[in-house]
Length: 383
Image 1 (cartoon, rainbow, N blue to C red):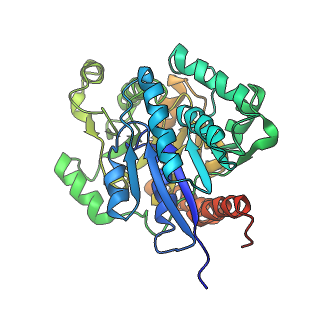
Image 2 (cartoon, rainbow, N blue to C red):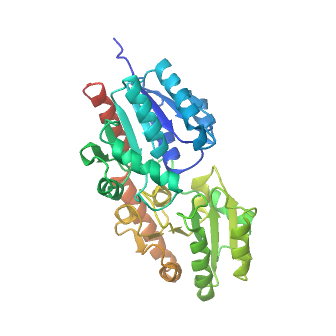
Image 3 (cartoon, rainbow, N blue to C red):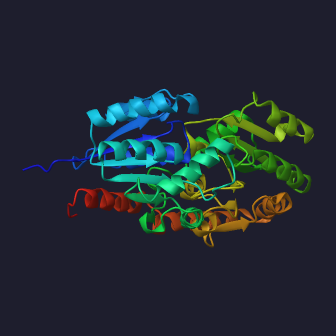
C-alpha cells in the first residue's frame, strides 16, 4: 500500500533569482520522482524566472499579482482562497511578508503546521520603514502564528531572537549545495572569457548578486579601483540583476575609475556555474547577509574566496578563504591584492579546500534531510 504523500505549500514573495528562491528550487528538485512529498508554490507577486522552471518540472505554481503593499489585503484574500481549496499538511513561508500573510491565513484556516523562514542576519538595518514595521510585527506574532521558525544561519537566529522572536520555536537549517551538479567547467570558462576578451594572464575577481545597497556593489568598485593601481592584471566581473550597462550609477562610477575596460557587467544569468568558472577569485562584498548562498556556490565550484564578515560567511568558509570586516573598503582592496599576490598553485589549493568544506559540511542532502524531518514530524510519520 502506497503512503499518502505529505503536501507542502510554499508561500514566497517572488520567484526571481535570489538566494531563497534558488534554495527553494533546489529543495523541490531534490524531491523530483519521490512520491512521499508533493510540493506546490504560491508567489505573492509573479512567477519570475524560476516559476516556469518549476512548472516544467511538474510543480503547480500560482502567482497572486501583488505589486505593492497597498495590494496586501487583496493578495491576502487570494492566498486564503487558494489555501482553503488546497489545504496542505505543511505551509512553508519564505521571508517576512510571506511569513506574515501566510501565518495569518494559516491561523485563520486552522493549518497547524506553519513554517516561517528567516533568510538574513539583520533586523532593523535595511529596507523601508514599512518593511521594518513588518519585521517588528512578525517578532510579536512569532509566539502565535508559526509552528516552527527556520533560520538560514546561526547569526540570523541570534539577531532575531534578541529582537523578540520566540527562540523556543527557532532552529537553524543551513543552505545546502549539490557538488555534483554545481562544478567547475573549463569549457564554460574559456567560452565566456573569450567572449569578453579576457586574456589568460588576466586575473578575474568576480562578484555575484542582485544590485542593492546591502550587496554594496559600489563599495566593490571603489575597492577594485584601489586594487588595480597595484595589480595591473586584475579584471572585475559582476553578475546579477540590474548589473548592466543600463545601470547609470554603476556605469558612472566605473567610468570614473579611468579604466572602465577592466570591468564587465553581465546582468542576471542562468549559467551561474559557468560565470563562476570564468573567475579566478570570488568576492563577497555584502554589508549584510544571512547564510550567503553565492559564497557557497563559489566554494562548490572550487574558487578561492574573499568575503566580508557578514552573517555566517566566516562559519561557511572556516579556513578555506579570507574574511575581512564588512564596510571596510581599504581592507577589501587589500584582500584583492593579497589574493592576486598568491601564486596560482596557492589559489587552487585554497579553492580545493573551499569545495571540500562544502562536500564535508554543507551538502544539499543534509539540508533536505533536516526539512524532511520537520515535514514528517508535522504529520507524525517516522523516517
